[in-house]
Length: 298
Image (cartoon, rainbow, N blue to C red; front, top):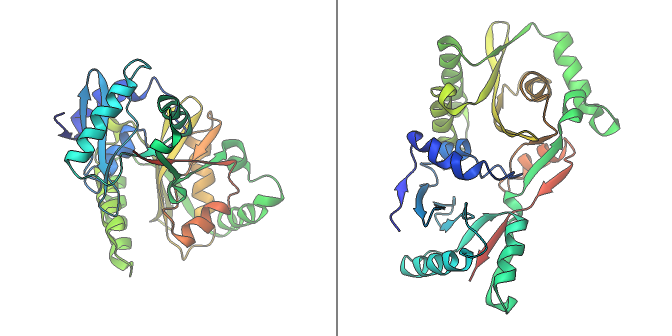
């Protein structure tokens, strides 16, 4: 197989294979792949009209994602080819980022379940929420979020704008760079996230991404970027705000869905990567469920 580094011009090819599916995972989106193309060295190949994506995790270990466009008749052959490639290229894993349905298909191909090793990848579970609850903050569980939202609305002079003009795009990049420079923990994920933000806002129309920015006293103080993955699901890829402004995160979380994704049922707010503070924050919005992802070794 000849793998090619993912590029913006590959969107049409990747979309062709992704959109027949209705993934709940954030991983199977061209926007996700494009955002992390450098951090994860994302490459792809077409083998017998099946899309094969190869990437590395943040520990530097390469793996394949779930093949897309396969049939029941050729799945075993594809797996055997990928197993051989893995052995020849000393890859730690065969597959990561697998959804549960694919795991069931894989199990059906093996006569002895001991032939494969499957484990849950908890740090990469996606957090799924009911859109209508995030738009209303209704109920006791989200009462605290509603209080923060109300405090922001009552106490700040603010304006919400779409990220669709040169001025707003430049403001987003400037503020993102400033927040990165001020962060004391500059790990590689934050660096690549900054590069991803720049790539996305400079290609909003091509990527078909939604974005809003919140100005407080005419100063950009929060922004969020996301996409509608299918008719039922939207993914929030980026959400940044000034932590010194009380309620701004509750405000932008609710407002972004109100303005851009009020016709979907589920909001995917991605994974926590095993970061304790991020996990606590995502759990505080009381997810409907955690979308499991799996690692598979043969």
